[in-house]
Amino acid sequence: MQFRPLGRTHDSIPFVGLGTWGIGGEMGPDSSRDKAGIEALRLGLDLEMKFIDTAEMYGAGHSEEVVARVLEGRSDRVFVASKVSPRHFAYDDVLAAAEKSLKRLGLKQMDLYQLHWPSSKIPISETMRAMEKLVKDGLTRHIGVSNFSVEQMKEAQQSLSHEKIVSNQVEYSLIDRSVEARILPYCQKEGLTLIAYSPLGQGKIPSGRGSSFKILDEISGKLGKSRNQVALNWVLQHDSVVTIPKAADTDHVKENAEVADWKLDSEDYQRLAKAFS
Ligand SMILES: NC(=O)c1ccc[n+]([C@@H]2O[C@H](COP(=O)([O-])OP(=O)(O)OC[C@H]3O[C@@H](n4cnc5c(N)ncnc54)[C@H](OP(=O)(O)O)[C@@H]3O)[C@@H](O)[C@H]2O)c1
Image 1 (cartoon, rainbow, N blue to C red):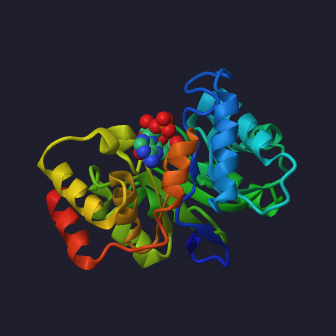
Image 2: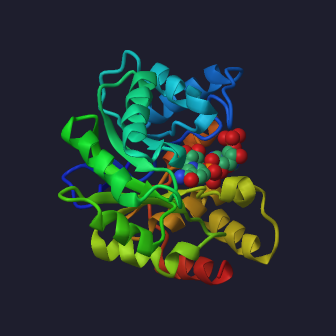
């Protein structure tokens, strides 16, 4: 596994982490597939994908409880990130939401606490004041955002008195490259990590058809990789980018763990960039 620095901190995180949307439920809790999710996430950790991304919203908190079971009894260092939902962006609500997430995660401290998406109701300065308090009190080590535009990132950073935002978690894949216009260059210039979510287009890459996918398959065949591995490797060619494909299935996790120890050459990279432009 390869690692990238987290923002401008001294921490580093793996190129490929473990996404948990759907593990422990979606909009509500669902325990029916916990065992499979736990097995897949434990396998991912054993394969050096020691970065788990979850959220209070996933399975209405049950995803975080599943993560706690995954971490139980492990002595290795795992980077754990969660997210606060915009309905909890008022000062006291942020503090309470973080305490509840930590309780569900069975942790005293998160590595990264992210604002799940921007709020039009609560001023960002109020939310960021609470985030700084969480860092000061040791409840999270770092502050991140998700689904923020460049302007929103700037405003969020300006609201912080001494901490730095270390990351923005946004959608990025061969089939959704909208971040390349402004968000990715801004993150690279300002030293924020771009955590690419839905890097397999929520399953549209494994199942996609058409001429661009033919080129993807041709390159995959030539390299002896799966199309998912090539698609993830393509995203990881960009400086400051790490990714978190969904990790609910052991076969998928095994495949996704093997995407960062090799590099597409520039001709294949460019052919894919053009095919999916
Ligand atoms: N911050 C946000 O607003 C936000 C939004 C969306 C997602 N996320 C995060 O990003 C993570 C990943 O995004 P995502 O779940 O939306 O989409 P994704 O990882 O792009 O795609 C997930 C789909 O791809 C399948 N898959 C995964 N690896 C595969 C492989 N090697 N071969 C074939 N199929 C594979 C999964 O199947 P199985 O389910 O069968 O494994 C699932 O159907 C989430 O789990 C979540 O942690 C964050």
